[in-house]
Image (tube, rainbow, N blue to C red):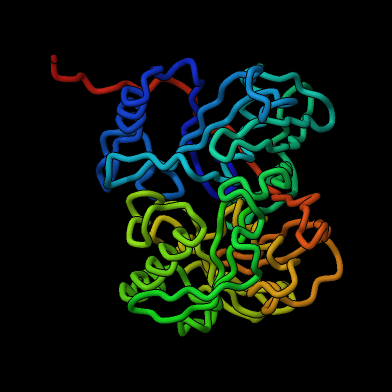
Length: 378
């Protein structure tokens, strides 16, 4: 399934081994990991195409899953290491779950939109997915454009409002709009730590000597910069209680928190894809580090988290963003502009998120069987 700008292997929960170790071995074999080309599996040798969605039935005995129709577990399958990160959530792949559920007959289609409330096991929080439907099937044709995806399609909305605090327990994990991290080899760095969709750490692009309009290739070519960004991400993860020590980020939580480098609205051109974006089209610009690489577009959960952060007074995103009076926040990224609807209210000195949406398109690419390699006899 393609969901937004990512691609994942979707597997029914009952088709995988029950034993955890056996399950992970089977998944790694399906993907062809560990191998940088994943040549002996069906993944795409890129973090955006080495993703997994496990779909199961409702969890009737779990109070946290009350009112949900299905369960959904996301896995970020490592490419060069025999590991799967179960800590994070992919917003892009989430958008394809409704399409899959309708096509598999797991839920009944309703016209013109099928609304699916499901339980995400990674964050132990519900998600709501609104999938356009025609003639009892997910609609594919439409005029909605997703930068980084060829053509157009029917717009699917994913609302992440109920995932606030899912990874750390609070929307603002430290309670502060801005924290200062003392990072070895970097020095003091001002950051904003925000948790919705996934935990994120936001910093000023200018503090890293950047504008926030660089291409992914430019950032990835600077290995010293990437090491500094990973050190910042590790310190942020430790501050949020996600890992045991700042230097354990790659091994204990390689995918999250996602790191965003924020800049004010500005015009830019991505020479790699011939794209021009005018400052008037965006409320801010951002570049993401995901799985120790620069994201070629913009992650779905990062979209909603950036939008929410832009609405919280005092955060770095709020400081740099154009003042936004409506519900929509527009983010400039390497492949264009992405929008999110954000509604939140201040309650008892904190914030409650009422809406945090991501618009995507999705479709089934293929279905069939993946064959596991023969194992040596025990």
